[in-house]
Picture (cartoon, rainbow, N blue to C red):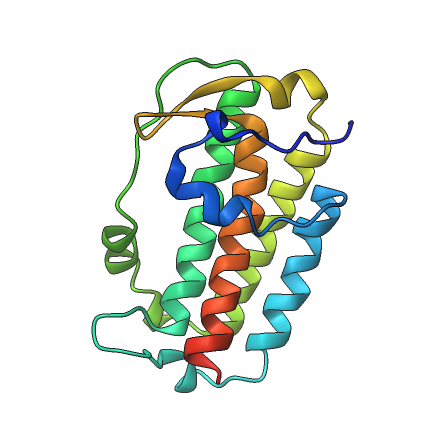
Length: 173
């Protein structure tokens, strides 16, 4: 494993810039790992009824957001794996709202959803930690846009960081 290069703007779709901008300097696998206890600290003391809170009509509940994080992690890590392995097959996008609606996350317990995210993130950390420089340089196509493996590794962190900010500002204030 070597240092993961910070991606240039030509390596990802413009809408991912806000995620990538959230990634601090440092060891990316360690940063990814550190997000789990940060997220758990925010949510561990909530009861299931509180975790059903929506900050506005039509917005996801806390449980749905957490389920979305696990789904998004799987999809982004799958894209990372495919592109890092040199697979040039264009990868389809997905509609996150449809995934959340189909998953019925509100029926699950908050500890169960946290455990799922923790497990999925640990698999992501193992993947990211063990890719080499050549793998991070690979580029592919995801959702009709160019995307590098390095960008996806950074997007994985930034996506969760984005939702942690939303949790703090709109759900837990």
